[in-house]
Length: 394
Image (cartoon, rainbow, N blue to C red; front, side, top):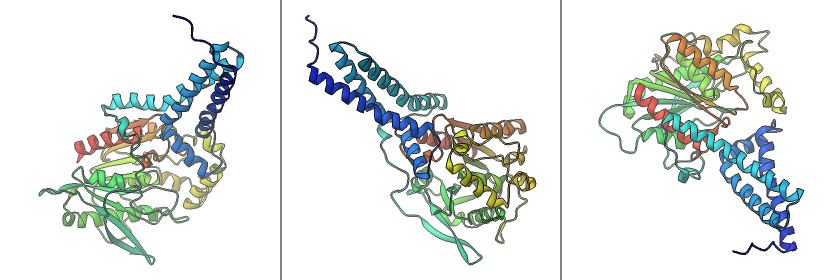
């Protein structure tokens, strides 16, 4: 067969220009993901970039094909350079998904590319029942109740979720997760709390413990079993879930009997606030957000760890682990701006030493709050693991 003729010079030039332009999305994405964020918006873009990184493979692949096509007219440094850069960007775009696919195999979790574009977890198909569980200092503390669409006749296990966030956010922050949990034959209570008042972090724990007592009192009314309660939480909510269930030294903020949790799920939560804790991730240390986050943590305690070591120890669930601690699932984001994965690894090692039933799900190339993306590969794996864990321990 005759050789394919080289492209017309104008077409070759257009292909080269297009190939070069197609490197820009990948380069920008790399900068967002790997460099310290300059703002909260920058961090949010980095989160979404990681969660939808598969789409970045498309411009890289097209850029590679265009560079190879232009090279048929004679390879030059430019065609070779563009081909190489696009090839590297293609590989880089596939790394997060390939890593998560490997994690899914280890977890036995099925993955669906069809779900990849299923949208965000910020809305769902129905509304909860909202209750006032406590009034304190003139503030109403709320909890949302999510029940299965087709409840059975037997009492169902209960899941109490404690939202995270950097402010006083709504209790049902990601409601699609709530309805998923409920439709797995569970009754879900999403609880609000006073968000770490300055110098009085214990009040947040006290509110969560109050909410747990109220859930125990009202579970049966909503078809739940008050003797089977799991507590879950994301980020700051994960810290509160651990502090509220691992130790009873902080009394509830209302007159109630706090039940013992059967299981706890802590999502991308710091567990050690002492001076011996792992350093925060280097991206945070190099980011303008680092000082803001440090000020926020010091404000809720009253000062730095050097001045209030006992307070920081009291805020460290890793020091509360005993053989009687509830079964615990730790979900770690492997590329977390806020929590070094080593913090969670040390916590899991402490659970193992104490003989606590536990599981550790570490999700590589996954950012803090990855569960915002309902259809993401990390979220798909997490649903499988949580379902297994709750089925086993509830």
